Length: 332
Ligand code: SAM
Ligand code: SF4
Image 1 (cartoon, rainbow, N blue to C red):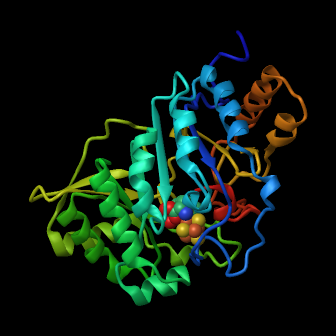
Image 2 (cartoon, rainbow, N blue to C red):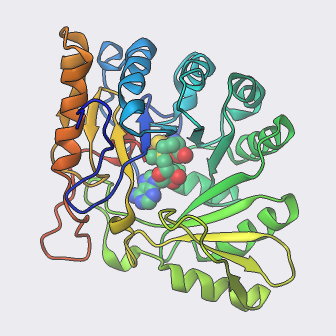
């Protein structure tokens, strides 16, 4: 077995082909479930440079990584992002590059990103109501997000996916309006259960469960039809509206964890490798990348991290410990 080219399979038989790269921990809004009002951001020299990210990806592709998602913080606040997309799209073996964004800066960037080779886009939007947008993000900008979604459609992204975090006692009035927006504009809407990555305000009682969301949708639109899953490792359970008016995804990260089909590893913007969103340990790749380590040494560090991956995140057990890093600094 050549450690630099054999697949990244962990102790539980999970094969990892999916790398999420956070390009910054900064953001132009302040979602309450993701970061505090005044977070301490990393200094710029701590962030991996595009050359370093590209080198890392070239090292992990022979180990089976073929799918990348760029995230953050807000990835579009990182200057020159289309340049990074172009570099990654040019790496033989990468077959899929996606981006998750809050959409605020998307309108002018949708076309340059498409031209650079980006083909999948997820825009996060929890509400269409400006007052609730302000409450949830502590900033304004819902119109810019909608403009960004429409610009992404015009640029060629198909489908544009919209992600909404679902919080009990907050999100209920937003579910139907978001579903209408999706139905009217051919968007794929996915609701994500609220996860404990916010530094301690999360409580189980604040999770609006996937089944409760489904109930709200069913009351308004009639029964939804479960879609047979072509990719058993995809986290969303999909449902079609019976009238053919589109598709909704439910990501039940808390109530029905999909850890046993997890195929992801994560690179933080400061070059730490995390084998789980909820990992308590990280591997410091930046020191290796900047300290003269050769490719084999970096490949070995990745392999060791995957080998140490635990079975699941344990949110539903008393053993669960919330990681010290918040969502914006991990890269969701
Ligand atoms: N800024 C970009 C955005 O908001 O799309 C990318 C980074 S953000 C951390 C990635 C995704 O994580 C977003 O869809 C966001 O709504 C989601 N997210 C953030 N905190 C979360 C939490 N505590 N539980 C569930 N999802 C969360
Ligand atoms: Fe920013 Fe995304 Fe976190 Fe909201 S969820 S604060 S947009 S990084």
